[in-house]
Image (cartoon, rainbow, N blue to C red; front, side, top):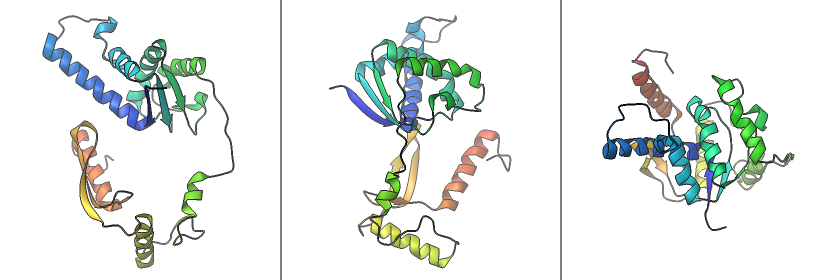
Length: 223
């Protein structure tokens, strides 16, 4: 198969939202703002981006297919309807059964038709196993032994985390780096190599609080 792409599903949906935003801006730039409501598929950003994605890939493979975001949930029926109508094949892994996707989500009744679409075009396979591949990777780290978590917080825990980080990175040179993320944002990482990065929980928590506070008008406790 020549035209194929593999995504973490969350990463894919971020890209879809970005492309929808860019398509709308380009339409305004070239045609101006619509003075009336145009319900045709040619004016529908979701449909148009789905067609572009389908033209780029005849096979889409998703890892961690899970829906938690309301904006994703409300557009998925239309988006995937168009993908499937264009002949795109979708393969996905998920820890959630199709019927349980977006369970207890806001306005879930609008999402339920997508589940019917998914079950019509895709065939679920139960791949239940007791083997945990994540733990298998951890077995190769001498510093972890049989530990699953490190507790309590304190100097010994910090020293252990440093030991784990050094082994995971094969003792490579660690340096700060600014990473580009979605919608033109950047994320500063103080310690990163080609294989791993270490974040300070307090720093990221404070950053998230600031971002959320801006959106909510700056009220404390808005996280």
